[in-house]
Amino acid sequence: MASRINALPWPKNWIAKALNPLLRRSDLQACRKFKRVLINSQFSKAYTQLVYGYSEEACRVVYLGFDPTRFRVSKDEQREDCIICVAKLTRFKNVDRVIDAIRLLRD
Image (cartoon, rainbow, N blue to C red; front, side):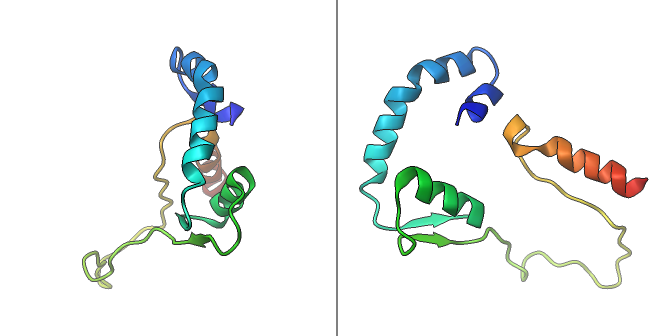
């Protein structure tokens, strides 16, 4: 959690550090009321189980997706190889690694 707080710009990081103990306590209390949790990745599931103590049965991974009937790419359309990264630009998202990977692939 500290790395996420440190990734915030000043003064938000300072405010988050000051409020963290209070917010953490209220977050844990609120999450005890949930019987089931939908999560978007196995990594987030493991982290959620660790932090909140949810059982295996209480957590379900539902991957983000799209409707293929609405978004289609023509088979006749010429495509180039590409890498797409959609993320908020914060340190803990490691977007810099995607940029490094693109450079390595190009080289």
